[in-house]
Image (cartoon, rainbow, N blue to C red; front, side, top):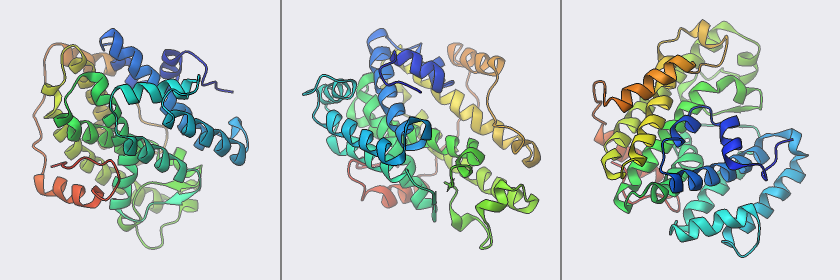
Length: 308
């Protein structure tokens, strides 16, 4: 059974194969805070997802206990209380923390996303919020918040695109139903129906095109991150984006055979490109599309005042 009391860096190394590479390039104080935040976020996510941590009722009771501790902001001597105190010291809006926790908690049950707007809201809740929490750790000003949100959401869209089968086995589909045929069924995907898998793969590719827009916006904010933390986030971005781009190059029949990930050599090549300042063609984000995303998300408490 996993243990939230474990060393935060150990938790990150075990569960964040790409991000843990990037975090090692952070300045020491930022690295300590980032791993502390990641360990908390991962534990809360595991309480929602992992049946080996207890029955659903037991896990939700633990979730609520940690929620109270983090929102009491250090008034209790606990790992969650310490994270709460850190977020208080960083002046993170409590609405952002609540949006993160609320979105995770709503994810404890089987679900099918109906629209792309719903997917965006989910991506903001579980990952855009983490970008907002990370921003002050990195030393970036509040004017960089929209870039941090964009990067978190882009990474989450990449996660969704990579983990379709794993999510399906938990009774969840984060690809919007509006992108799939009316007769599409999760059971058919799990049973390996060829047409269903082709349709699903097409939706995966469409989601990654949307992720590219958010990555392009996030890139515009890198200059607001002080060095050396800037390099670490550039590495995180290029690694996650690399997973998505590898999926986009992968044929449907190969995609369904195994989870797409970057090998060690591919990761080292991505890191070397960042270290040497080598960058490919920059994608200019579609301002109209980003404004539409903002209009869909601005109702969520804690969402920044601008995205485009």
